[in-house]
Length: 117
Image 1 (cartoon, rainbow, N blue to C red):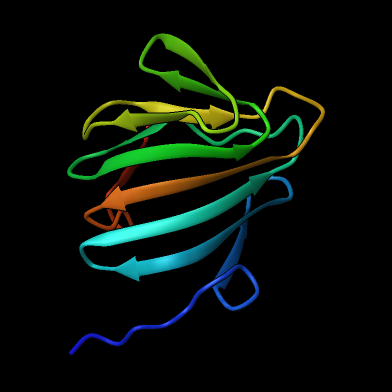
Image 2 (cartoon, one colour; image 1 turned 180 degrees about the vertical axis):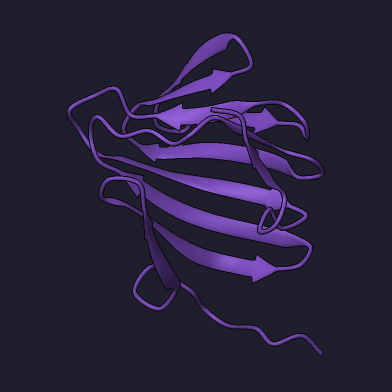
C-alpha cells in the first residue's frame, strides 16, 4: 500500500533558483512532480521545452506572464495553462509584487528540460 502523508511548504524539500526564486516539491515521483514556486517581482526563467513532459501552471497569487512559443499569455490568480511536450516556454513576473504558482508535470520533468535561450 502507498504511504499517505500530509505535505506543505514547511515540510517539503526546497530549492532556490534564479534571482531569489524558490520551489518546494509537494510531490516528486517518477510519474508526477508537483511544485509550488515563488518568484519575486522582476524575475524570470530561461526559455526551454521538455521532450516528453506535459505541464500545467496554476497561479495562486500574483500575475504571471507566460511566453509560449511566440505568444504571450497573462495569468492571474486562479488561472491555469497547459504546456504540451516540445513546446518552448518560460514564466516571467513582470510586476513589482510576488508571484506564487503551482507547476504539475507528468511524467516528472527532472531530466527532461532543454534550454533554448
